Image (tube, rainbow, N blue to C red; front, side, top):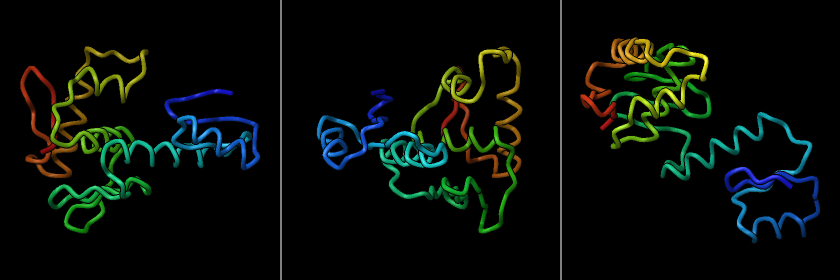
Length: 148
């Protein structure tokens, strides 16, 4: 059996096995073989619950983020974001009210092969501000970024 976070992956598929797994601390129980899309949907649900966001929607003033559809709208109008821009916005929105360090953002968005000394993060922040409004993402000099 493999534990990931508080998730149980197993080939044991009886109701008794599932009850035992959940009673011993798993937040969810998924029987192998499983569909990756289902696994990712369940992990997103766990992340939303951990972030205190039980719904698939995050409202940030005039910006609406649909976590399930991975879509963003401003004043009801859809906004096209790149995968990185969306990932950055979602990460900051899930940590709303907190200052998120540049290091945490790089670890979340980029892999170890990318140059962390580049201005890539600054470019993505700038693009999001152009598309969603300059006041949405606040820079905390020397600390990181936050969404109020």
